[in-house]
Length: 544
Image 1: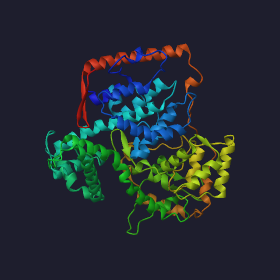
Image 2 (image 1 turned 135 degrees about the vertical axis):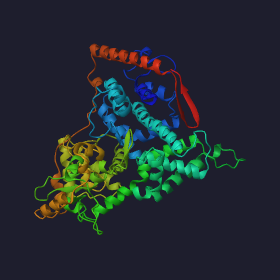
Image 3 (image 1 turned 90 degrees about the horizontal axis):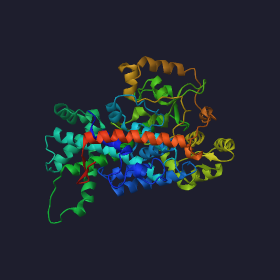
Image 4 (image 1 turned 45 degrees about the vertical axis):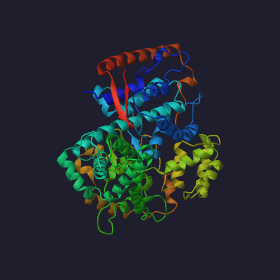
């Protein structure tokens, strides 16, 4: 049976407002698909997204929105909107949201309703909304609402997981907990939500007992949980009774803390990614941002294999540069670090992965350039002011000038060629952008499902073959990295149908589609009746 949560998220896209006139009864001159109006009303009527939260999202997105290429109405196309949402979750939470991946394809919505509404909700909503708002494009408030809707998905899952954690710890949802009990429940949440722990009581206790073996950084992670709990206690102190000394915690306190754990665990755990990067960088004697595949597979000083993905899987991820027959295969360090194989966990709607440090470089560019194109001198001036260590050689200056000549003197900030230039300028921060359609990244579980369990790690025979073959390749030099430079450009398509105008037939078609959707929603609403969400210490109910 389709869950209330899944159906309510579908309603984020299509339900009429909870107050006032419905969408189709609004002024005729309102643009088709006022996403912010539709979703904003629903988000404010039962979905617990506060105005402070919306303001925080808006503040983060505004510099990016102003710099992105826009249509004639100052709005974003569907492709540019996806990029904005992807960037937001990457730089804020280290999330890769399902349906918004850089290499994601449009889903096939021909499956069962339960498959669409549950396992593919973000992708389905994105695709459906894009179809409806493709004409005029997405305004800033539309993108803010889209981000808020996806974040709301995660909160729904947090509540479900926390309910399970109370059960796993033999606590009722109305129980009051002391500090020790609270930390036990919060630890349970991290284990089942971030480390895919068992949801059976006996197995969960086993996971808890031996978590240090499964996750060697658990002791440091406990400090992270303590910091979350301490910070939450401090922030709610002004609202507590100063005459009552109480250390009791209740369900909503744990919801609040677990939301912060979900949002902050990715950036906090990024130190593990830095350790991996430092290990690989030590093998990169020229600072090129790449190491030979043979060196990648090299044993540690203790004689153990540290990096164990199969070569073919590394190719699928977009980690291996094989552009030079004389140099042989090389592993692109930052591509590997930010690849799907190093994601910490994969939740229902997103994966927590290593932070893409290139996001910070783009943020610097956006803050200074305030435009989607710039001259080479403008870009170099901003880059030279950054705190990141850069290496703008004469060769790189010439490459940037070459990109500008292709585009009549201006470099597109969000094109593949600038991303490629940033990779060579910041080889340890910016991944190399492979040409569109040349890689098909898969998560480890997807790879095992496709290739079998034996494909989980490289065999010693394969490693020995790689090391033997490497003897026939010449050593890397400081200038060899640029051999993989290509002039293949790829730009975000920022135009929309409104730039050319829409025919009367298209308007009637869209009206007909909305009528059918609203009819379907009405049937679902009659089946579900009222629904309630609990968050932020209040009961939010919205009767439809």
